[in-house]
Length: 214
Image 1 (cartoon, helix red, strand yellow):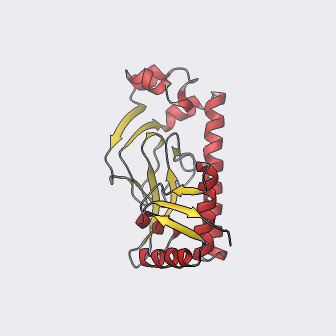
Image 2 (cartoon, rainbow, N blue to C red; image 1 turned 45 degrees about the horizontal axis):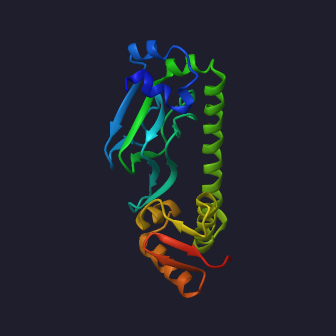
């Protein structure tokens, strides 16, 4: 499969015209990344719109004591940089790294300006902006008014709906789960053990079943 065929198979790109010329001009680049590789450091300038074709990435912040909190996750067909590319101060506020092997499409700003004439591309762009806003609102709510137990239950319920199962398979390790919740790993392990003893959940490796809500 050549680059043109590859890009046409990406949902957001399938109706866009002029892709071949943008590839030739190197305004569209396809690149592979290894697991653990950093895509952007906090403070880096956003110079492209990035589409996740395979793999997953995480955006995280570091506290003064060195612990990390995962703020966003980017999976297949996610768009990175949609809210920054045209911003007056287009600086990444978070670090972004590959939580698995990834393949991304990088679109230069000038290429995005051309593609914004395509209706389907615009709608995907707006959808990405909305998802980022919802994700941020969710994190704000998580940190401001809920206990660790409530945040765990809320996450498990959301995953239960997404996975169509009462038993949830965690899409990441428990260490990464702790980072997502913004707590230390021992704190998460203690709370999960208490919840299991209280009959709220049952745990088997990465499989967690919600037995009752709180």
